[in-house]
Length: 325
Image (cartoon, rainbow, N blue to C red; front, side):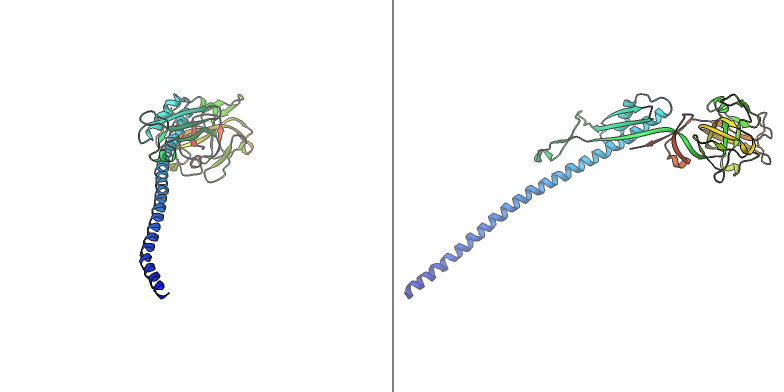
């Protein structure tokens, strides 16, 4: 019995190293399987990161192109001629793409004063999809990338402006970019045929050298003023929005004006009692009024910079363009 016990112990001692080696071999195999699985996941994530990054960069370029194209088309439409909108959209979309290529189409709604531009990826080979660097591994070899933008244009219907309103007959009778004096000596008739002495009127102020005007609301007058209620040097050689009135009613403090729309006017000189123009002429020798020209204004500045609170007024010579989506 004792001999058998000794033989058993010897056999166990000889078997233990082999058992330990077999266990370690199994563990190494399990680690290899887990490592392989992790590598597959890691490669998949890497592929997604690289391809998603490429898609993001491409979409950013397409969005920049759509924004630029929409603003460009809207700006041209605001001048009265949209031109070839698709050619304009394609040119601006392509110039914003790193490879100079991009799909682009433009749809204009002149009644609403808006344009929508859609852009899409286009490769140097003419393909309309982006080839994914690693997406094919996951069964997604290509991606379609697009972007869109909408821009609007319009003329003011309400704004806070210089408190000086000009008769529509003065505006209609003055060629664009033609410098002239608007003084108390000007005469014409309003839309109802009533005489409009002077052709302009001072408006009730809503603030310092400012009047709040809405084409839907008649605006009151502040007669008797002989000079603007602000420093003339701050408005000379600047472009302001002048409310253009169609009809005038009443007299003195009871006078009211029906404003038709807003026009851009570049002021080059002023003349008031006590502050006469330094350049007297036959048109103005100690006159009361302002000198300048009605100019075409198509502004990409925010309407708030011009104190415009609403668009949608009749189209005169001032339009504002902005991205609406």
